Amino acid sequence: MTMDCEVCHPNGMTFQITVHWTLLRAALENGSRAIWLLGPEDRSERVLRVLRLQADNVANSDAAAQKLPSGPTEPKAQRIARVKEIADRAGLSRGKAVAKVGYGEIVRYAGDFVANEADHVEFLWRACSGAAHGDTWAILSLQDREPIDSANGITTMRLTVSVRGLSMVAQEVTALVEAGFGLFDYRDQQPPR
Image (cartoon, rainbow, N blue to C red; front, side, top):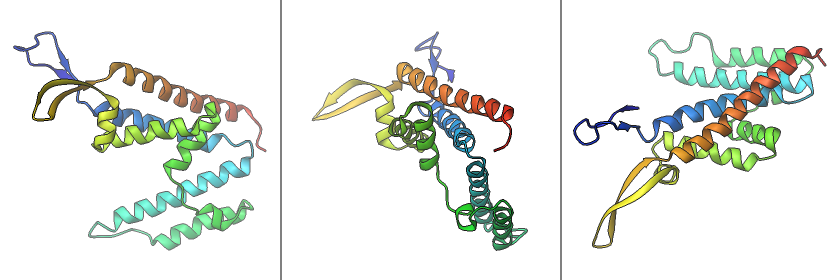
């Protein structure tokens, strides 16, 4: 949020029209991740999910390190082998422990877990992601639009932050984050299964 033009609108505030969607997306992804990790009743499934995230972390950190002149400090295969060894010691499938995980899977699980609304939460995530990346469909869908000029079949629109839409999405994302904290508290009280 920044100050508006003091001459044009002396009491106005200007929101960048996509920055808040980036922040909501981050909160949605992290709340969903907590739910995805802590949601399953079966402890083995929770451990498997942690291992999948670690294998994904290995792949992502290796891809980033490949761009550095020094390269990765440890070979990717060696790091993945450690994830597989942990899976073996836990009696879990090595293949499942390194299976790719994506946020589509994670947010759908969280939406289903919290409100039996996997499609809805995935839509929120895709819309926030689209706006964060500057995708036209998302920006036009999430903002208030006001026609200000029309000539030769072309209309100029003023896009403004949809406070109503922003408030609704923020409320739903907050519920996901709170559910993640609730699961953390619940698992913290339960004996291991």
